[in-house]
Image 1 (tube, rainbow, N blue to C red):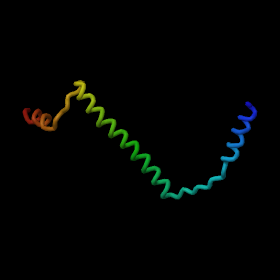
Image 2 (image 1 turned 90 degrees about the vertical axis):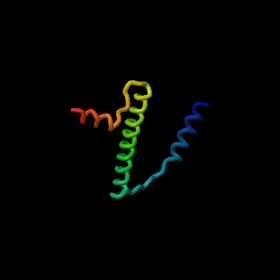
Image 3 (image 1 turned 60 degrees about the horizontal axis):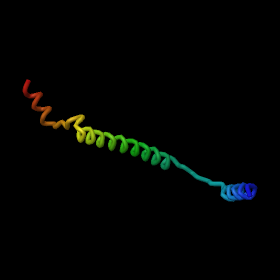
Length: 76
């Protein structure tokens, strides 16, 4: 039975092998690079947004308003 299973695996592997031809021109390469950059920037921006929200939710860091910073600078 083990021999049959191993031969079946071998047959499906060999039957699944095909020669694939793919051409990537410079436009395709730049599209892939832009996609990777967009994904990384999107993940970082989302993490930064949710990090500040979660920290303020648990009271670890209070949200700062732009007006508060301007008032302190104008008091001096």
